[in-house]
Image (cartoon, rainbow, N blue to C red; front, side):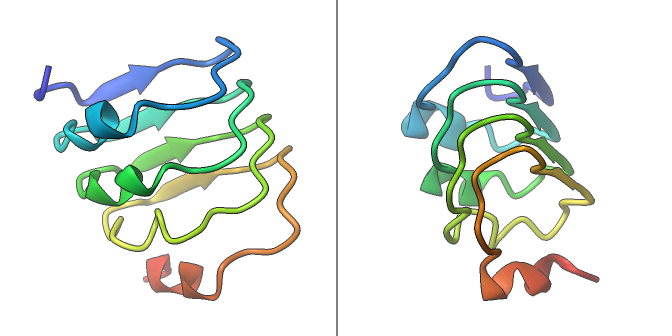
Length: 96
């Protein structure tokens, strides 16, 4: 399934994401993980270099870490309703 461009896994009570499998989806353009129970963003997201839209609303994410650093094509990031207390300084690198 390396040719997948869109995955929607909203409302599945996911607590984790398989880092190896998600990191292999290099053609992914849109990923929706809204309304789950995720507490962090997997480091393997940095391999999703074609990702344009990332939706992580209504989870339990406390930190974004550096997983978004390489996502230069990202144009839409929705992270509302999480447990974030701050944004990483390097998130400004996503701003064009």
